[in-house]
Length: 496
Image 1: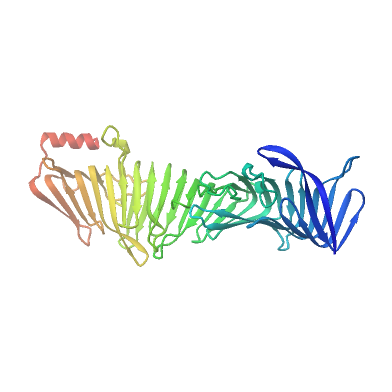
Image 2: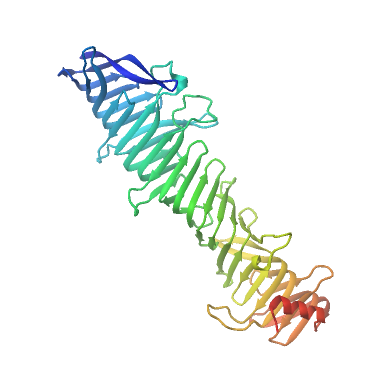
């Protein structure tokens, strides 16, 4: 065994400035040779370097010479190379080139199951070390020594910048695995770090090589996202995606949810996913949802639920087919739509301006034969054998109902019934309808089919199995409108 000890003039970072020190590098191998400029070590190479402990099949040291002293600054390593910077932080590859002056490294692997592997540890706020592993065929690395570690010569360097390309795979503990063509990592010191020597902290960017390529992340819950670009913030514990599509699991009784969005932000600590416009969400039981602003998935606490609630902000359209009763539900909401898994409710709220809802911002609810406009709407649902069935629908606030025989695309059937109420409740099969008015107000119902007018405290409309209607007034009931009521109907529905 031949052992060589060399003194190399190295440039090290100290308190933000460059300081030159002569630091011994110890190398051992089974054979060595020197040509005046390059030293070559072969077989079972072991290196004790100021960057860390290194092992390889072979190594060469190159540099330049002058009259005073030889300066060796480039270390080339081949065959099963391992570099241990500190405990938990290491590289493994087939070829590496380290420059002690610039503190840079080039690492490369092979396609035959021998990629470059970078391992590190992220310590979370609870003090738990989360293993990080990044793999690719090529990595360019820039090291640096934090200013608080200048008095230490070993195991004090961290990865400052890293560029990886070709077949990139990122494993973040057991939380997720990401795939991309390129990865960029930039070290950012943690604001909450108890230990200033935390080596892994900052931003990771995942990128494709071409317009047709995508990045992909898969979570331990088997959720996945495909995107044109991904960004991981280790301190905020968020995943941000650009031009994304993917799939989320809900719970054991619900099918998976497919989605697309302009951007996605996944806060893994707060258990919240934010989708930004344009948004399309499809789910077999819930139907199809589109949104032009923002959708929030708020984290669940029970084991059988992935999300407590889904909140849609801004203009949202929701379409659902009740396969039990054969009814369709299409809702447009300009305010807030929320789906609450705990209570089994879907609610819609219109925005307010000066304490009231503008007419053009009311909820629009379309069924097969009617259109309803109102300020708020709540659908109470039941899950049965993986089917979401509305049990009842409550609609409130300046309710206006337009009924006609059919509502097919392009249908020109005239409206045949009109109604004004303060609240409306539909039964699950949509065959029973109750309209109510607040105190000192009246429900108004105009039926042009039967040439009937009705003014009452409340009105019940029921359809039998043959779709025949029966209409009943509750409380004081009149079968003709007074002048004020007739004017109200004309203004609300633009009647002549």
